[in-house]
Length: 236
Image (cartoon, rainbow, N blue to C red; front, side, top):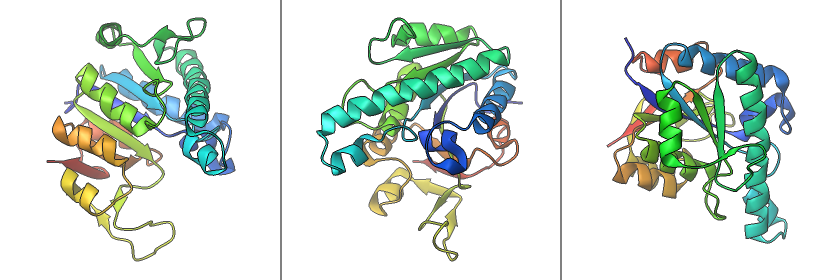
């Protein structure tokens, strides 16, 4: 029994880099693709938004003196590199995949067209959304919130390296407390680093649920689809 039929998975660029912290770790890429295919083969419609922080992060570039818009566009191109790598890995595992880009890159991807994306999902193809929203000053978290609402996803699943949302960074604080559930308002008012405020607000206005979970916990993605309480749920 599946609780969700159409999901949007948000994968950060950092998750693809493994312990190196930059670039793409092929063993991590294989592991991520394996989990995605396992869920897709259950008949679930899977859309993915992938970040680019393992190659270039727009805000970091701006902090170092680069023009913010230029730096963000570089970050969008970085997401395309990750999307193509993930597409290749998924298709080598036998699952049809489409990359749709918010920036015109017709030689390597389709342009983002909402109706076409939905049709791909209905045909059980995995769809990867690249290049963010196509606009600077917006994060891939906001892209995930936007695309999830556009395609009518049941939920956003944000894959991280920790097993949910904590009151403070669990990597640095042993006394950090994990939340099982939160409201959108609590996330915003407490300044919890789940997704940026724009993304959370967009989800709140459209009642789009979010689950933050550790993608590398065994079968976590599949267990969420089956209705098990994994990670932290954010809802109204």
